[in-house]
Image: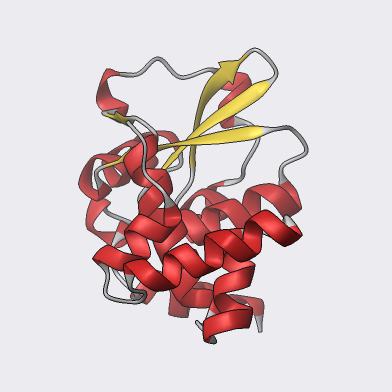
Length: 165
């Protein structure tokens, strides 16, 4: 199944089909990334491009049920409890040299930034329902007062920002 970034941006009402065609023509000339050209040509905010990319990625990758997965202790050791909850990441196992990490579409952008900057191995993401991800985080990275519902709550973000200050 093919899912193009331009298609997602059209679905979201950010671009028209004609605008996508003009970006693709420019991309053919320059070789620059589609999202960067969206920003340059049509002044689309980087956050809008990142959100569309997260939706595109979520459509292309598989969704797992963490309760049905087998977890690798080495994979789980790649992040701390605080990191798991702060970035809503759940390392599952290694697939060859790559670390499979579950997150939600909503948290994919932050999870990716975290993985690129902190985890020292190649990663790939799979999606999980927020409640099921929260249950698995409670099971593998228990923290007092944290419940599965915390995954979608904004209170965690405020808490971690205060702790970092």
